[in-house]
Amino acid sequence: MIQSIGDDSKSLLVGGPAFMKTLVIVGAITFIYVIAKYIITPYFKYVGQLQVREIYTASALLLVIGVSILMQKVGISPALGAFIAGVVLANNEYKHQLESDIEPFKSLLLGIFFIAVGSTINFKLIADKPFMILGLTFGIMLIKSLVLWFIGIKHKFDFDQKWLFILLLSQVGEFAFVILSLTRNLDILNKEWYDLMLATTAITMVITPLLLVLNEKLILKYFGVKTKVKTIIENDKINPNSADGQIIIAGFGDFGNTISRVLKSTGIKSIVLDNDSERVEKMRKQGFNVFYGDATNVNLLKSAGAEHAKYFVAALDPPEINQKLVYIVRKNFPNLEIIVRAKNRSYAYNYLKDGIDEVYRENFFSSVYVGRQILIKYGFSPEEASKIGEIFIKSDRKSLRKIAKHAENSDQYFEASKQEFEKQMKMVAKEINNRSNGEDES
Image 1 (tube, rainbow, N blue to C red):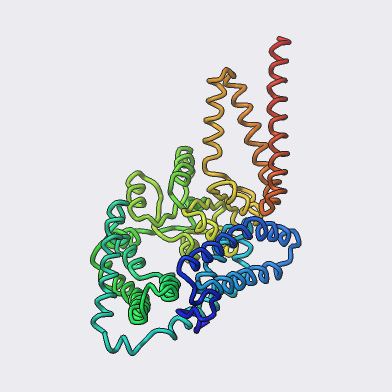
Image 2 (image 1 turned 60 degrees about the horizontal axis):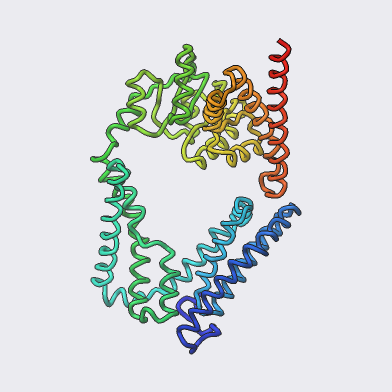
């Protein structure tokens, strides 16, 4: 692998004309796309039916190795071939299963890749031209920082968020190693500039963690919203034994906010956890019992009274963090009843398969309500529209649990969805007929 970086000696097209290389490379990538769509995807469907995890792992690794060898034969870096294979796997409907199966290999292979890249860095060149490399390093990072700063301004990031955004992304990404290898193979860069850019990329990645430490110790200590967060934390005095701790809501976005308002309107108190300091401050001014903190932190959950609470509403963003929260709560507080907000049907299926019963899609009930209002406009009476809405909600939540079992198999999923929807239509039609007959009899 070390020799292949920046070396096309194993390519079948060595010495061939440039247009021929281009055609063969485009043809190889097209070939991979066609194979992925018409052979790899059906193959993984078949493997999915076998339910043998070892075959998943072997198939994924074989695909990566095969595509890497093919790319090397046509004059492209095998690392780029591995990237293309990764794209193929990422677009597979079994990508989550594949990701979990190859997780043990990921860090190991990534380490080998960086060792291989590191062994090709020309340290003598760094010693000979330190000012030129430092100029390239800080020049590239400065240009990226300016672009990222304007992006942060456009999206109205807080000062500390903007700084973190810049420091995390101002480095040259690791994919640059693959691109540099490709440019070297195609003679776009000469050996000296290839070594310069390789060293520059590596140095930016080494500098980034140091800048993050500097940001944490010096910059954010005196700027940004840290003081506001500190004040909020100092004022947080959670009493887990009070009645307020019977219901804990994690996430005070639209979903959690609405739930809290409903409970508060009836006199039921709850503890709300949120990691947006500005939102915490605003909601406190409105009288809500909101506390600042990361809800995925077990110690914070304990201090909020999760060990004694009855209900826990998981409503964090993004959905991946919410899934992590549910896992942590189930693991550490098994007696706590969890009510989960699902972003969409796909996430709802995941929760249901994990054994969570109280799963609610964030836009489902509002969508049903709008559908009910349209029925009224279409000529249905309010009572008929309400009853149809109730039937649809009840039947859809029931069918969701049945369909979840087939979510990973597209053929079975579509067939089950079709059957369940036909049942819903029959139930609604039966209700309409019953009401029509009742009106006729009267």
